[in-house]
Amino acid sequence: MTDERWAWGWGLANVDAAGNTLDVWYPKLEMGDAKPSAPAAAHGFGTLVHDGPDARGVRRVPVFTAVDVDAPIADAADAYLRLHLLSMRLVRPNSMNLDGIFGALNNVVWTNYGPFAVEDFALRRLDVMNANAGAAMPGMHADVNVLAIDKFPRMLDYVVPSGVRIGDGDRVRLGAYLSEGTTVMHAGFVNFNAGTLGTCMIEGRVSQGVVVGDGSDVGGGASIMGTLSGGGRLRNSIGEHSLLGANAGIGISLGDNCVVEAGLYVTAGTKIELWDKEKAAAGVPLDVVKGAELSGKDNVMFIRNSLTGAVQARARKTGIALNDALHKN
Ligand SMILES: CC(C)(COP(=O)(O)OP(=O)(O)OC[C@H]1O[C@@H](n2cnc3c(N)ncnc32)[C@H](O)[C@@H]1OP(=O)(O)O)[C@@H](O)C(=O)NCCC(=O)NCCSC(=O)CCC(=O)O
Ligand SMILES: O=C(O)C1=N[C@H](C(=O)O)CCC1
Ligand SMILES: [Mg+2]
Image 1 (tube, rainbow, N blue to C red):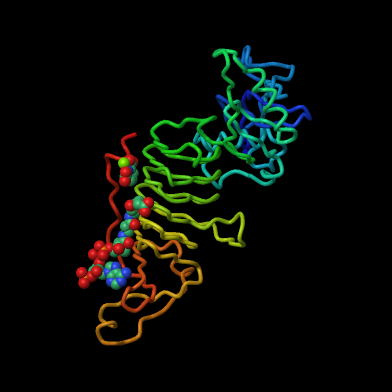
Image 2 (image 1 turned 90 degrees about the horizontal axis):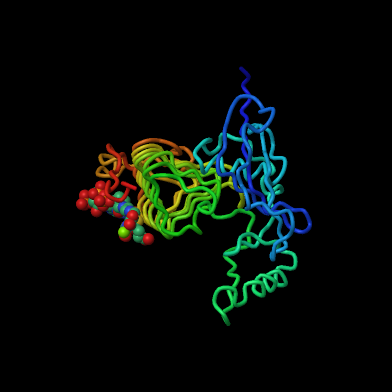
């Protein structure tokens, strides 16, 4: 036994004319504590493999990839393997080394004909349209629709996890980790290395590094601050049976059984009054703490008092209950 964590499998790579790997699809991956000496089986991609370029200028080649998930990312095939591990629920967010992921991934034009290189895209698009002209329907030209230009593709084109609903596939990147019973509505968003650890309703944005616990709800338009851009360093999370209200936001973590009022953004620096009924009734000033001091605490309701304008934290005894009917996926 070693304490190494290895993952491996056969992937089908799209490789552009310059030799750049645009993407790799791994239908199946395995994990173990040692590097496999050789693939256990043949790749099985059959006629999907073509060594010469297609009309996109892209070759499709099988690659056998084995990676130590605790080592930095080596290349695009490695990055794609780790993103698959997350979406296949083989590895939880924040438990793998993802150093170097943006450098390893190529920027790609994602289309209804698969990935294209950015270089000379207009000419490649013309080649594909000409190749298709009248092929099935005389006089008709099949358009190449550009869905995105990005380093990360949609999860659902690579991994379809069981027990989830996703209203709009564009809103969930490969590398999202969605547990059984999760529903992501159309305005929700889940980044890579982020997701849900149980049954959840996601109608807001779950940033890279953020995880949401069982029985919790991220309301419409809600935002959970991430760490990739904008200078924030705190990796935020939401515990179990908590509610981040519609259009609310957090730059701190929520523990279990918490609620953030709709429309309220609580940051680490927000000055918050600790609600105390007796003190308030007696006109005694309430204690004040910064948001960071309440980060991760259980049983807290955050509101902006509509009479005084102060943000307040009030004790809450129980967690929220999701609507079961929306999670029998
Ligand atoms: C913060 C809460 C939870 C508060 O709810 P309640 O008012 O029921 O709480 P309560 O404990 O019953 O309230 C106790 C007392 O506090 C008062 N109170 C409540 N909020 C207050 C405020 N901001 N300022 C001053 N007083 C307040 C109540 O009137 C009540 O007063 P009395 O004692 O005098 O009666 C709610 O307002 C909220 O924001 N819920 C979030 C719901 C949400 O966003 N769900 C996601 C849906 S997502 C969605 O719908 C998608 C749509 C979309 O995309 O936008
Ligand atoms: O899962 C659904 O469908 C949901 N529907 C609600 C709606 O249609 O308003 C919102 C939450 C999830
Ligand atoms: Mg509905």
